[in-house]
Length: 488
Image (cartoon, rainbow, N blue to C red):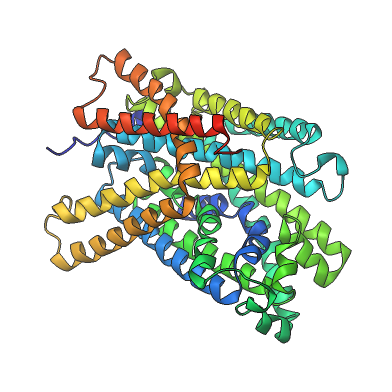
């Protein structure tokens, strides 16, 4: 029996929303992806691989994420009545509880990612002021706390205001990255570049397959945000702009990320790149141009990360607000303020980011832990969206009157995206999948409350099975933390 499709977001029945143009939607995609990750790429790749491995990694990640971008584009056209894509596609394809877990997983991913951003900013300041350390000191926490609530006030004034600011910030944060690429390529050392081709002369990095696998989490993290236009589909002036913005934004960002990585191998040997303090773009640029380069890129880091934080906070609030309007989260999370901002969802999001920031005082290597956690939590929403697109192609739903070749083509794309996301589950490792379940299991209480307050059946037989799997995995995660098999 097929699952009934959820109704379009009920937000259209509340206060009127302002519409976004194609450039604004594209900026939301780029702004969501170009954040802290790009500035950490050189060292993260340098630890794992040389030039050859990085080229293969970007080819795999680029192809896989492009397939996912096409999935969001196809779904926007095949199911134009479905808004807030990451959550709603999972719900339409696999039922209410699957949609709920997709929404909570994506929301939790943005919370971990936003906490990562503040740690990254304060770690950058740590290069100039010792009191900030690696972003995990009390002083760093105090500054991050002030930033969280300052942005909360800005976003509460209205989604459109924040989105326009994000488009402006996106332009300014791209400029230092482009300068970095050009300057390093102009100063290319042919000998260093040749030695870095495989980097085997510097030590054992493992087989080429191992090198590529060791880069998968970072390549996935830097592309989180690809769904930005789908999340904001209810604000689009034209529905077809959602898919266009997704593909245009992705291709632009892929070009930038791959060039940042390759240009880094042009000026320093692989071991020195690997040992560069994060954010590693700062150290590499300063190596080429002198001390002023440290300040130049550091300013770029702060502007870029603040812009990405804005975009991610908007997405987090949306993905909590829409399920509440569709009866999958408690009704109080669907409240808006006079500006049309999902205010309760925003408050919960800001409190959650604040809570995660408190953990950075006790977590070992907070930057890498939060990066890996944010990536692992995003995998379930991506997988379910790709699987739903594959389901449509296999069943023929929404392809009535279309030529068979179109259905086959889109089915191949969806299949490739599904396989790629499954591969990422393996690359993430069991530790972070269990930690994800630790968060998803207790969150199911929100689903139970939402169903109960509307007098709806809580679980179907299949959903009970899924619930049991999540709870068992969550218990295993807690036991792993208690026994020390899983460390934070």
